[in-house]
Image (cartoon, rainbow, N blue to C red):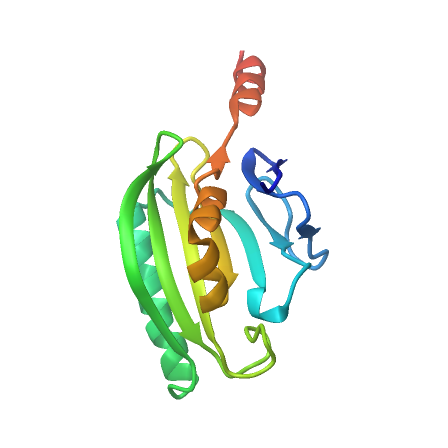
Length: 184
C-alpha cells in the first residue's frame, strides 16, 4: 500500500504519495493570495506519468463555482480557436460534490496538444485531467488541484488519484485567529 504525506502551504493542503517530487517555480508568485505547487510521480515508465498541480488565487470578487466552470469552458474554446483547432480540449464530465465539508466540482477533462508544454510522452498524446475546484468564501480564493495523466494510468489508478484530489482542503484557522487578535 502506498504511503501518503500531507503538504500544507498558506492554508492549502493535500495528501500525495511519499515518493512523488515537489516542484516550486521560483519565477511565479508564491504568496497567500496566489501560488502554485507541482508534485510529480517521478518513478516508473513514461506511459504512467502523472503530475499534480495545486493552484490558488484570490478572486477580485466573490464568484460561484458554476461561474468559474463556465469561464473555464469559454477559455478552452478560445485556446482551441487560437491553436487553429490543433489542440483539442473537452470536459468529459463535471460533478458537483463535497470535499471536506465544502462544495466543490470534480471535472474530468481531456486534451490533445501539439506543443511540448503539455506533451507528457514527447508526441501528440491524449492527456486525461482530473480536477477538484473549491472556492473559499473566507479567503476569497479559488483553489484547484489538477492531476494530469495518461489514459492508461487513469484507468489503472483512478480511485487512488481521486483520493489524492479529495484530500484537498483549506485550513486557515490560525490566520483567522491572528486577524481577530490584530483587529481588537
